[in-house]
Length: 343
Image 1 (spheres, one colour):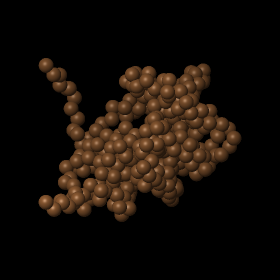
Image 2 (cartoon, rainbow, N blue to C red; image 1 turned 90 degrees about the vertical axis):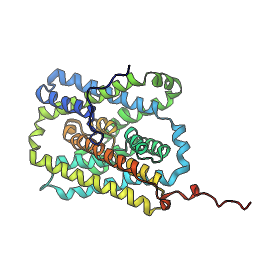
Image 3 (cartoon, rainbow, N blue to C red; image 1 turned 90 degrees about the horizontal axis):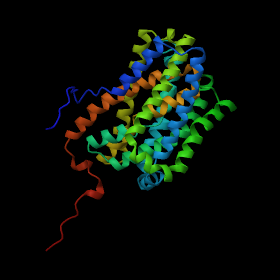
Image 4 (cartoon, rainbow, N blue to C red; image 1 turned 30 degrees about the horizontal axis):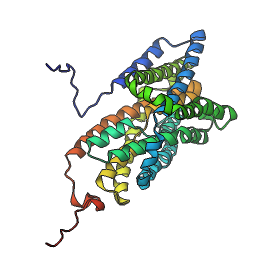
């Protein structure tokens, strides 16, 4: 006899349980922030968790599979341009919202959000629901994650200036030691540990999420002790949500209609829209802890809010795309049937 789940959420309103866990972690940090020796222990554990996360990212990412997708290079270049060129330009434009709409600290977090790589899992899931090019979405997400290991910290150091630590030798050393070295170690050891990671995927998924929760707790604890949350009023929070809604709408429209102007077929446009308009919470949170230090709590707030917003909006879009009939003019040219041969 099959069991039915007692909790059924509307398909158009996906409430991410992990976001609820993140919110709970923020509440715990607000009520019981780590201080003194506890803060030092939490900081050390957070540093180790970030290194572990990027080791696992490196060990899981199949470079061979990513390289196989190079044959669809126009699509991948389009997604990379959206992620690391168009998004950062919009983030820089948000500087005009300071100080009347966003505080300088929230704007720095908004800009950091624009520098984070795309997601893999949710981009693939939504592309599949919308009947898009799933293999292209897999490769596009992999390329974005791989490029983000290097590009996101460098762009943050260049564009955020003092808010992100600048291009000091110390910040570059932290990036190399905590992010790049573990990632490369994971890639090197993948041939030996890849099978183990595949067999224990569920357990390691819990390790991933638990590590990120630890990073969030440490960052928000430091923010509470430093008193940075006094800067976030309900009006500022509402303004941040409005700015992020505009950002998401612009990117969703640009990736969809821009891809059509570039000559991509419907399946490819779906992959471009979902991979090119999304940002990775899993990659962004640990990066922020390395780049921002004690100011990481305000830096990750825009990313956390954008993550849930993109899930809800993209779920609605994917459902609607799945019901759209494929128009003849949107079919790829190489799929058009050849004229029948004369008998």
